[in-house]
Image (cartoon, rainbow, N blue to C red; front, side):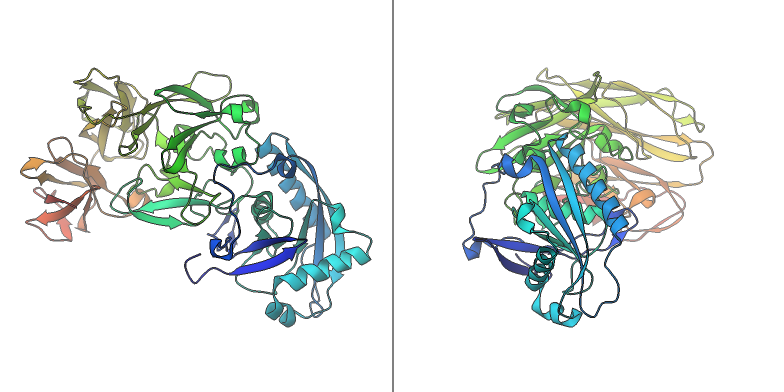
Amino acid sequence: MKGSRTSRTAIVLGSALLFLCAEGLSVRAARAEPLLCGVDDPSLGIEQPNLDDEVSPSWTLGRKRVLYIRVRFADQPNEPEAKRDAKRKMAEVDRFFRANSNDALSLKTKITRTYVLPKTNAEYTVQGLTPIRDDALAAALADGKDYRDYDFDVVQFADGPTGFSGTATIGGRGCWPKHTSAGIAIHELGHNLGLHHANAWVTENESVIGPGFHLEYGDDSDTMGPAIGSIFHFNAHHKAALSWIAPEHVQTVTASGGYRIFAHDLRESAAELRALKIPRDGSPNYWVEFRQLLTGNRWLLNGAGLRRASPVINPTGTQLLDTTPGSPKGRPDAAITIGSTFSDEEAGIYVTPVARGDTLSPSLDVVVNVGDHSANQAPSVTIEADTLVTEIQSDVTFSAAASDPDGDELAYHWEFGDGSFGANSATVSASWYQENEYVVRCSVTDMKGGTASDSLVVSVGPVTTFRISGLVTFDGVGLAGVHVHNGLLGSANRGAYTDPDGAYTIAGVETGAHTLIAAKYGYVLEPVGFTNPIVVGPSVEDIDYLAASD
């Protein structure tokens, strides 16, 4: 593994040589900071499973017995964890695995008394993890508890080797949580079951799948990323690999069509289709999923999570793809929201969620187009509003007039400038709860790689902010889809996309100096006739950019 932050430790368990991952993390409230973890090293000759192979069901299904050994070192006065706390934690861990597997996997945990190991903290710190486990197993055996009578063993300790809060073998028994959170125990036992990490692909210049870098633990909605537990289920690919989603509930897409997938994090969806697998020749497969338990994430509630099943580093891990790169939200809005299309033009793969299904258990209708659509022509769209000046909590109705030269069916995605978005419809309504100016944008897609958009500005109540506007051109022609923004995160972000004529307007800008960024994948954009920062108050026009091919 690349980078100086990773440690590798080998241990012989029986005749199998396994590798440990040392996870450096701290827990802040209910969330965990990013982890650090070692992985199997192909240079050592360890055969890696194919990324689409399932782990043996005999290892991942049924009722598993866990020996939970609490230990303290010879010079430590306190036990690492009270027994009652360990019981509560392992009950929570059991609930997580039952929910993720739809009761196909459960845990029965035996918690030992706290054993005093023979070496000091300093000695174990130098000697590493193997002596800790060896001495813990020996102490348990002397107490009448043979680890070979159990499927998994957990050694809970404090201090000792530094730089991590939990370690585990991958695809074998044995894990060493130092921190006492349930999320870390779940994460480490996930490694025992055979899972690698839930990662992310972070791109440059607002591409979804273009140049970038592999971010370990970058999938924030998955406990095999940050060790959170609770409702942060393993992703659909990982569940399928563990036989928690049956093969008949994963649709391998080889032809264009419409598919309905159900939320894989809800028990009532267990007998339904819960994931799409879209093969990409010579490359990792795409996995499309739907979730409903993370109710604070409106993008996941109304969109499709998209992952690749072959990270750069971990063969059985996954990579979350952010389909809204450059957004002020970061990866929380990574899902393909309803009415938007993910396009892999090189592979001829196009994925568009079109509606929440009208079903008893929540579902998502997804259109997948595959094949060569290089001759496809883009649609066009213009939008209108029944008013451009309104008051807070007053509805404004918007309509889109769109057409497609190929006669393709169109999907609509509306954004209202406040982080909210609308239905897949040519006509929508919106209202706002704060006085300001808002850029309303409608994007249409023919679901085969062709897109178009139009926008307008709505003033809500007395407005004390200003606008920045300009034009982006390429070879003398307006360039659509360029993101011009101030680079800030969250509610401080101000930005807009260029329309088909290359024009843009950023609204709601406060008085003061502002630095702008312009980005579109495949282009280099240079300011024309201005320098950053821009002083706003009053509004500023002619903030133009010239684009060149990257």
